[in-house]
Image (cartoon, rainbow, N blue to C red):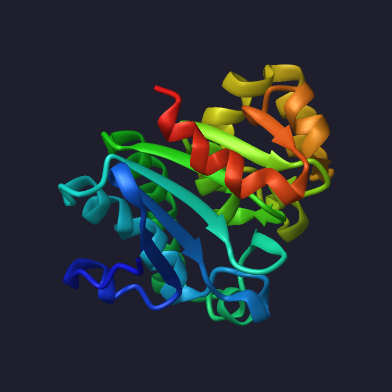
Length: 209
């Protein structure tokens, strides 16, 4: 059943579906833009973990993307507003940190079902999850280098822990795309699965414990 509890109503680009046994399905929902993060969605991804933490009906949250992407990086129209705009950049940098730290501080189990391309803030959500499942042919990249800046947000914290320093430096310094099978083999994600069974597998994980 779709959740309309008041603390979730404010999230314009996130859908919430309460499943049985305390499992909440959260879907990033800008499919026409491949779920790219604009200012509204970026803010939502930085704040929603506080409400999930406080929700007594949730013990596990499964995060996925609508359509063919998980979240394909920052919306270019939004990014353009930050050029030579310190105030906008400061807000975005603060929210980027909040995504990482609020996910680590959330006591509820977070599972990501990476159904398609994941870049930027979306990739932070995908990889900061406690358990990450990825479609075999889905692609991820940190992407910061393509914008002329060093890897930041989650990447310099979690990538070396997940796949080792040598692999992390290679992928973060080249912005090379990584498919699900490779991400699985290098331990960037928990496991990769055929795309048609991704969400079903992710929804079964909470019932294994």
